[in-house]
Length: 488
Ligand code: IPT
Figure 1 (cartoon, rainbow, N blue to C red):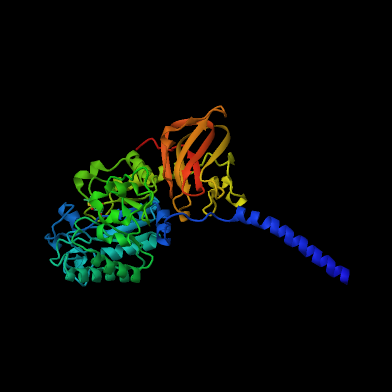
Figure 2 (cartoon, helix red, strand yellow; figure 1 turned 60 degrees about the vertical axis):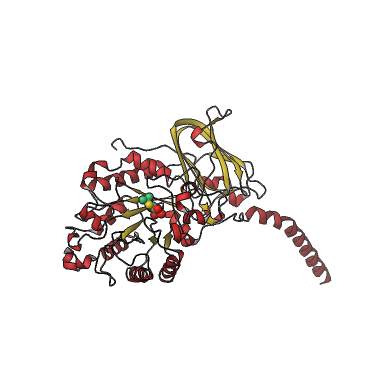
C-alpha cells in the first residue's frame, strides 16, 4: 500500500514536471496573436465580407431626366410602366451581388414609399393609382432572393421647407422610423453628405439613436456631421478609386471636416484612432440616375475590373450603382456587364496556383498558424509569426513553372492592421529573385489587397513582410491567372 502511494506520488511529480516543461511552449504555439490598434465591430466584419453592394438610384429624377431635382416636380410624373424589383434582384443574383441599397428619398424630397409624413410621395402619383410602394417591392424582392436590403434616406431635402430646422429633425426621424420598422431587416443606412452641411451633430445623434434602437445590426455610412456614428466612410471620389494605401483606420474628425481631408478619406490614416473603412460608391453609367442618352456609355468590363481592383482590391467595399429606367427595370446592357464582371472574378480567383506549393517561412508561430493556412481556402485559419517577429519571408516552391498575373493577400481584420510593408518577388531558376514592380514597397493589406500585372512565369514566389505594427497574421496569399473573356 505504502509502495503504491509512493509510486503515485512519484508519477504525479513526473507529470507535473513534464507539464511544467511543455505546457508553456505548447500554449505559445497555439495561442492567437493579440489584436493591435483599432479593430472592426461585428457589423463591419460582416460588411467587409459582402465585398460588392448594389446601389439603386430610382425616383422622380428618373422621370424628369435629372440627377438633382429641386423638389418642385409634380408627383404625377412618377409612373414606371413595368416596375419589377424581382428583375433587379435577379440581375444581382446573376452578378453575385449579395446586398443592395435603394434610394428611398433623394435630395428632391420625393418619397418612393407612401410615407404618412409627407404628401410628396408615390401616394400622389398615377403609379398603381397611388397604391404602390417601391420600398416594399424592393425589400420583398431582396428577401425572396436572399439579398440584404438597405436604404438611402437622403439627409438633404429640397422639397421640405423645414430642412435644417428642429421640425425637420422630427420629420426625418419619423420617416426613418417608418422605414426601419415596417420593411424587415435593413442592412445599411446611407447618410449622403451632399448638401447636408446644415445638419449639425445633434440631428445625427437623434437619428443614430433611432437606427440603433430599431435596427441594432444596421451598418451606418456616415459623412460630415454623422462621423461619430460611421461604420464606413466615403472614399473621397465617385469614380471607384480607393487610395494606395487605404487604411481602415482614420481620425473620425477627418470625416467630419471632409473638404480639407479628401486625401485622408481616400487613403485612411495609418495611426488613425477609429476603425472606419471605405465604401466606394460608383455608377455603372456616368450618372447616378437613368438617362437614355447614356445607354451607350455603360462602363465596359475592363473598366469595372479596374474599379474592382481599385476598391475591393484596396481594402474597401465596392458600391456599384445601377440606375433603373423609366419602365422600372435595370437595362439589359447594365445587367450583362455586371454578369461578365462576376464571371471574370469567379474565373480568375477560382484557382490559387500556390495551392500545392511547398511553403516555408522564417518565423512560423506554431502548428495552428502554419504558412499552409494561407492557401487552404478556409475562413477560420491563418498564418502567424511569433510575437517577437513583425516581419517574415515566406517562400512558395511551385515545383514547376506557373504563369500568373494577379496577386491576392488578406490579413486577419479582427486582429487590426498589422502589416505596414510588403513585397513579392519571383524566381525562374529557383535561386535568383526578381521583384514584381506592382507588388513592391506595398504598405496596406487589411481585408483584401489585389495587384495585377503583365503575366509572369516562375517556379518560386516569395512574400516578404518587411514591416509591421505587431507580429504577422496573414489570412490568404494567392497567385492567379486572369480569365478575361474575349468579348467585353
Ligand atoms: C459627396 C459628399 O460630400 C460626401 O459626403 C459623400 O456623401 C459623397 O458625396 C457620396 O458620393 S458630394 C458629391 C457631389 C461628390
